[in-house]
Length: 159
Image 1: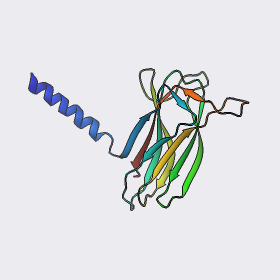
Image 2: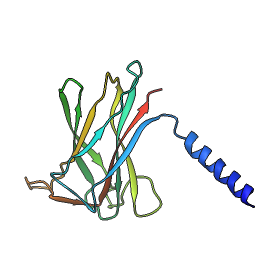
Image 3: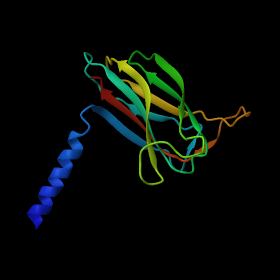
């Protein structure tokens, strides 16, 4: 019986590890039960092959406490020379009826949001991600963004 269970476990591990051959970097950081507007999530990227090109993604885990249809992010990519490229991004997070988009069977949905494509890295980079959600007609940002529980960053090999 032990051998049968071990063989099944080994098969499952092999299947899961071989399904994601594009992945180069994939890391999540918790922001607690609400993402504060002044909280910046930082990722130190590994040194990558400078002859290859990569696609970059922002990953989010959200639950049903997320009450907006869209999400606004400020994403900064710090280059090795100290120069920083900053992008303000908007992503759709829910259908018009309020149903949260993303993958997952429970109340937690995972969203893989496209950031940049065909990127070539020359050394080590840093990524900074900050939420910039505002309510309609209001200038100040949402202080505590409920429903976003984790923020991730993913790098995939371009094929």
